[in-house]
Length: 492
Ligand SMILES: [Ca+2]
Image 1 (cartoon, rainbow, N blue to C red):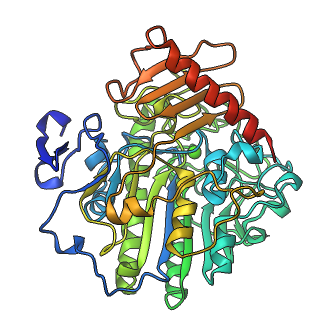
Image 2: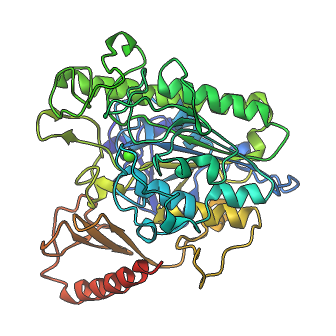
């Protein structure tokens, strides 16, 4: 179902579009609304339960990997069948202008956990799979405070299941950064069955000890997460479900018999074949495999939601689902085409066009976050930490100190639909791409020595019409803001 089938409505003077029966696609190019709008006054689950204590709600962050803006079925318009995520959106708030902090894995995951620009931690690109000393546990970052540490000190049990990718060395392990329990992989990619990374190392852990678990990674992450929920149902908990899906190698849940990656073998080729790090499949099979991966991810969300309902925790748990960066449209030129979809957006993972960092996002907390609501507010991954701090009344670090938070709390947006104060946001991946966003305007410098481009995202979400020539004053204002920001994030 495409956007032309949508039904246009007007509530409180704000135009938005609603698909018939809320089972189809919300037009991704026409959903840019200001604030959040409750589109169901009749849904009983949207009514606030004022008597319910929200002093210690559980927090679950579900982070998909490389999931693009157009990959999910339903509201985001993708081909995959994603009934569970559709339901999450129907029962919560869907975002149309949510951004990962970086266009790659580690940078966004660093910003998620610290609430700070990842550039302050020196993490601007994906950390490599070898055993180097970078990451959140490096000497330079030893004073960083993670989301798990903040919540742990507030009395929460904390668990991460899945992909860490913030340091493969011992001191980088999640259990040394606030998590009570970790099961998963420390690096950025792995065979979904053998858990062998692209350099031939087996990478699957229980806390800081190797501990192999058999099965398909997405399903193991789900099992571990549900076990954690069950074990901690009587305590407030923070659960970080850190998926590897839909990152390469592109393997579906039934692909176990295609396992070719063995310990000690190197899988670094960018070309089809047994030594490819990308897939056991021929390139033409990749798009359908990626859809299987998305649908398995959706089932994982469904199982976690079911578990919350079984444990009667669903009204006392805030779930936030998003992705760590935009999707791949192709890899290695045309060798691996049509991997995923970023909908109407330009660009893909590792780029600072919208396709690299505008991602799906859904917030869910029945009885508190209005059901069937849609927000066009510009939100970024690093806003989640201050949101949780405000929700749990945890003291913020000093805005002048070494842990100053760059994100802002979106709690008033989630609970009351309040608009965020205007601000300017920045993306940068070393010198391969920089972007600045202020309201409707986006400055893009797509690489070193490249000329700045300017786009009006309200009219041109696909960044196809460069307005740099027409608006030199806006260019110079945004460049000045960028200059100030770059000086600021250089400070430790
Ligand atoms: Ca990623």
